[in-house]
Image 1: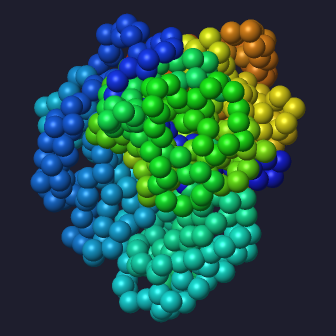
Image 2: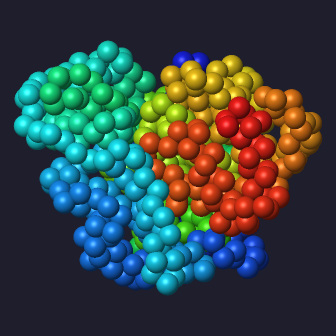
Length: 546
């Protein structure tokens, strides 16, 4: 799970996506940008796959996995398990695999095989270049001891309540030489009420903690933030349920201040959801309207922009939960339930359901089901930035007059209590904690602050450096080297980031590797001598990534 922000100056925020499905809402004005005219796709751009076509490609890849493993030089004890597949307009297929060794999962062993339309392998992108070879598969410490140490580590981090359900043997390949290890997932609650899913990796020989990352990734009707909009609903008897049959049957539930379970499906006798104003009542439907609208726009953004059919690209909708906890100032995405969850904010009257927050959290799900960027260190910063980048894309895509697109994150939800945004993409350090530029210490920052480097890169790539006003918001983006950067436009920058994420990034990608991944993406899409390729290089240099 990933929260939307860190708990230093503010709490964590992770966002869930919801889509209401079914009949058209009785009242309201459609503000969706779904009907935008799609440009002819670039040869290396991803093509939309039907659920059946995607399933067929995955089944074919899995059937050929043993041969693929031999072809790319894996050892006899290694096997490949297909996680995802992306097909480009020119027929190139990018197949993402997880790896096992002697039957054990290899964490940090993920890889992508790039195959031309002819069937010829064009290359392999690996999370680790180290050969997977472990001298002994017999642990020197017990699983019970590893679990105990993991729980202790979680308590050291300040978790309010912790639980663990056993430790599993794995091969850890995420940081140097592969070793036999245990993975323990510590549950319970974090200090601010956010669910806890701390993954702790322990060396099975020494008991030393090797790595840890958080699995919770923080972050309509008459809405609070987006005005009156059109939603899809499904009629059941005399009531209308907030289920979106047009977008994978996404459903929106009301937790009514609880912190567990699914909640109650939001329903209305009038097919109108919400009042457009904030209310402290746990039965208020305005937050549900915002969540459902955000989910719908996020689904449409991915479908229209990248041909992606839902978070997993399989046509299945996630679900959303609103009114989580009491005065919970956060929101989060949780892979284990494939759902998004929103708190109601301070005093239960500032729900964290704005459009960019919804886009941010659903995008954590997309990252989880593509590159799987580990939620720690530099890869964690890239994970958070990816959600900010695509959340921004969703906001511009929706073209909603009540919430115009901008390069500010969470400007509507007023978490700071003074009207300022949560994050700034043009100059991230304006929030008081985020990094404008890369340094050797960036990886030690909270992931919501180390994300600043990639957010700044994306802004520069899209809009360029210097002062400018966009949709009424004034920006002034600096550069590390003082050089002027010319942007290539947000549309191209989004295509480059998405292709890098889905075909060139792995679970352990750091900033240097992200530069390589985006250059590879720009080369594939526009050519290695293109203006776009040169702009990617210049924007990374401008944030001190070389």
